[in-house]
Amino acid sequence: MSESVKAVNMSDKNKKIPLIAVVGPTASGKTAAGVILAKEFDGEVVSADSMQIYRGMSVATAVPDEQEMQGVPHHLVSFADPSVSFSVADYVALAKNTIEDISSRGKLPIVVGGTGLYINSLIDDISFDDTCGRSDIREKLESFAKTNGAHALWERLNDIDPEAAAEIHENNVIRVIRAIEVYELTGEKMSVMKVKSRGADKPYNCCMIGLTYRDRGKLYDRINERVDKMLENGLIDEAREFLKRENVNTAKQAIGIKELRPYFDGEEDLGSCIERIKQETRRYAKRQLTWFRKRTDINWICLDDINLLNFNDSFTKILKTIVAKSDIL
Image (cartoon, rainbow, N blue to C red; front, side, top):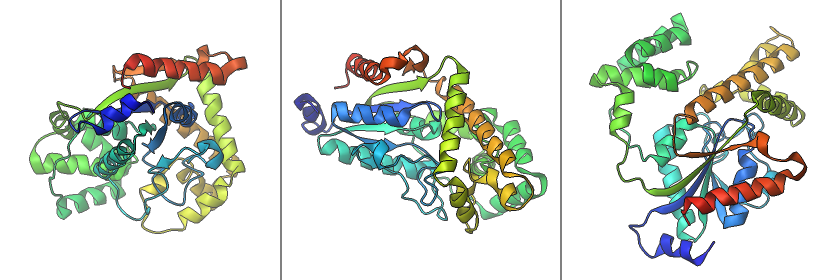
């Protein structure tokens, strides 16, 4: 990293921390981009993936291995116990501390991930209300979900707060319950509270880079190939062992874990379950793109436009050009 970056980081505490964020759908190449940027600008990677945080499911969540990391430190991966509740507020607190530590050592923090809620909450400095939950409300909503299904519970949230419902997948029952609970306790929508909580003076001088494909079929091909690679790397054994565990309900909702349960229970053949993993991953990628396209500060790279014969050099050049133009360093 240049001396000027170190000066910004260390000479004046009131200066904003330089930060790069690489976002986009799953299988778009975010890990590779993060490593390239870290090598070019003397940086370290901070993961922003709500499932990669958990231990014991590195194959299903595509945690980069040592070869993919290429010696670049990666933070906030495979550290959380799946049986312990972990919220977006917990993530933001940890990520902020990690970013400050990286910056204090004269390195450039590079946030890489596809969990839009994590990215937005961190970059936009969203503060979280300390509204206490009520066990009676939570238990009532949990009972409703068990009786009527996750979709019916999500529909209740959609009636109350369509904007919050649009950002929360119906299978994430814990977050759906929390959003309804906040409304019932305060009378205010969670989506409204979130807007009010955005920090006026954001803590980072951030360059956001988004990866995408104009031809959606190319992205879907990459997703299918990734699932096939996961299977080669031991996904079935990992999922079988993980599903035996108790009190890990949130982590069990990870794509690549829950879709294999019918196979282990003898209800469906393996081929059908694998195809469902690919289908659910493609749907997830579509939701990620929808989420990130709401932001106007992302510098998008259309990977279709990069010459495949000279991909790495061309990709690196584009990344460096975007960072240079952002004037964060």
